[in-house]
Amino acid sequence: MILWQAIVALCGVWLVAVAGLMAFRPERARDYLAAAGSTDFINIAEHALRMLAGVSFYLAAPVSRFPLGFEVFGAFVVATSAIILMIPRRWHHGYALFWAKRLSLRTIRLLAPLSAAAGLFVLYAII
Image (cartoon, rainbow, N blue to C red; front, side, top):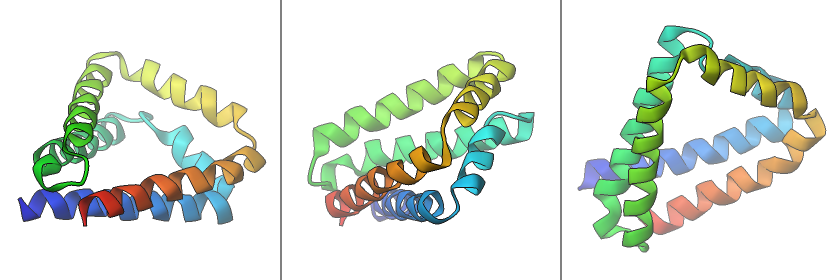
């Protein structure tokens, strides 16, 4: 159980770190978004990590402050990652490029607090 909690906590820390990237280096954040699904390796690694996070949320649910929410969220993350892995990689990459081209640097900065809030919420819910 402690392993799953630790991975969920790392997910929270990651979301806060991403918020910092979005706030202070929005062009870099947009470049990372544009790279999503760009190669087979990136696509598989991205979804393997996403599935690990989803499984961790699901298995850490009993010790979280919101067990049902963690179970549902974890199952959703695993299921959507599996679905995305089954579609052509170019569709996933095309979707990432669609948003990378449309999100202005200002919008990315404005979205940073949402990522930080989500990360802090995850940390609150699991610690």
